[in-house]
Image (cartoon, rainbow over all chains, first blue to last red; front, side, top):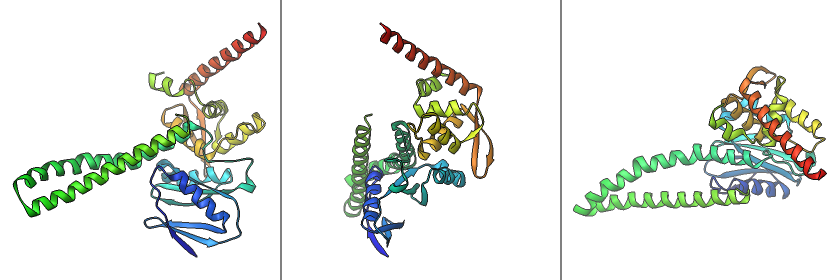
Length: 182
Length: 106
């Protein structure tokens, strides 16, 4: 069993797919991903296998029918992780290059589901918790010393991290859209 | 037909069109995939992520409705609204084809 830690943000799922494919080509079959990006592999015969991620909450709720749809089309279901479902299919069983999405509209639709499921909650948290905390503590930090300033510093750091994450997502989404000609 | 439906589905994607065309008879997702493969001689291969997403979206928008389940596969059929959208789209494609032929003949 081989383990590797890899982090992919929500706009990098294609990189993750490529990573799993290249590992399988090198003779490491993807078994599961756990915790914060711990990828488990087992040694196997090197093979070209395409890995694909879908993000579909409706699919996870109606799991049996969802997985059946993919299996009928020759895709093997592996696991769910952080709202994503993992599928794979060997190239030898494909007619040409196959993907679980066959048009740009459905790729965009998946991106919208990711945005609603993963980014929107973060934005809500940012607007309802981080911003009010900043304003509240800013006032206290101006008047007080030491502890007040320290706690303002912490909240401010959280604020900056949030902003950086949002900027990264914005660029990531823009890059994907450009790649698909939208 | 409200403005939202028109905006989203007219004109529609090739996938959307084939789904509605097939669902004039009751069918499940994979039988649509197979039928479209046959109808187009393998030129249009619908993928499962696209199929699942499209079917649930069309169901939510009232273009198709769930009929029953058969061996873990959901069967759907087109609704009156779906038929209206399909007829609009057919009219649009007929017009495209007609004008294309007229241009060629000139």
